[in-house]
Image (cartoon, rainbow, N blue to C red; front, side):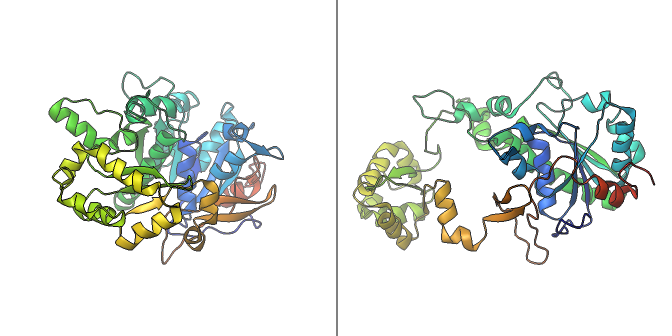
Length: 394
């Protein structure tokens, strides 16, 4: 490990990960594994990962890259020449996990498909993320998150009843696929450790996100009724929504159970609603959701948000403020739990990043460093993984 980088920490210390991914879904898997202590080596083409040219830049450095390149050492390799291909195979022979998210067939074209990798490392777990998966009639199509969100059912359900299907403003499908792939490769590692046999894990951008819509899909298959866009509501709970307060700030709440609905009605001073047949059960409230929302909104509009929240908190109602980014930075609970952390960086001085989302009591992970310059760690990677110098010599 290069001396100017903090050593790995977390439950995955000792695990070697070769990250061949580009842009978001594949590289995010490397991020999550690196956050938990794995030694992640990011393999880039000589021009660098496309994320380096994406989003806003500070002093010529992509902020997205700083986030998605975190906890990874960088080495650049030209896959298109025999020397580069062989170096990838040599690194794969030392790896526990290899991540890629090229269009199916691309690695095979370079002689780096599953058969070639499995031959040099039968214990290797290979995570393959693509738009539509490695098989099926759409496998060779180009598939980005926007397409996946649309075909998984999300876009059609997102938005207001009177509005159009609405795309997500975040990389939703990519993140869902990365989470699913991380779970899958760790499961494959468990089996490998028991059997000695590696695994090829096939993840599409569509299927993990589609699984989020299980209840809607099951309902449709049973009743044949296409789910509708419902804005801020849920089709199985009332009250549920976002409400604007007297000072123009918003809060959001949900009352899916009878107890939580009662807590909300007590907080707004409308306990009589629980004795009204229109609101006495969740099923009844769903049929009268407009009236429920009107009662809550009328109350919220008479109070500044801080006071409205306090009254709801007092009854145990599940409620929270609708936050912007500055609110997240300022919140004392988020600060105490280090939901975001400042990371020293040789290019930018320091950068604040979202912290890791899993907390381990005995082996805590950490964001040790942000995305590195292209090929910054060639010497240490070749030395640590292969016992070679920067030119690849033993």
